[in-house]
Length: 76
Image (cartoon, rainbow, N blue to C red; front, side, top):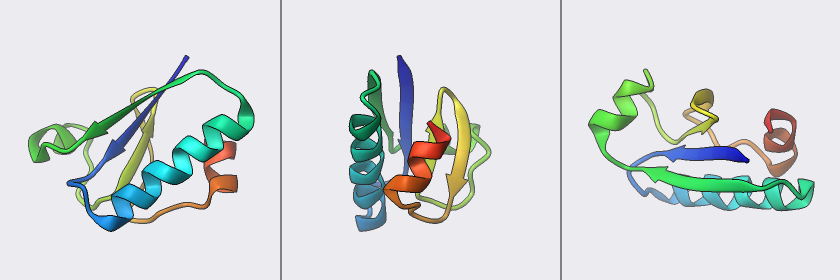
């Protein structure tokens, strides 16, 4: 199972990133768990300074932008 983490404080971009990540995982038919990391201290533990960010299995894949569903599929 893939662990998808959305790092951000709940801004509109964070919500869009969540939607795109879920759509990508569903399109690929993979099992996943989705976690929203909203605490600044937790986000900083990932080394992320700009949100929203996307982490997959604990590794940050993007920060500061909202990748398209197709881009996220490649990351998964």
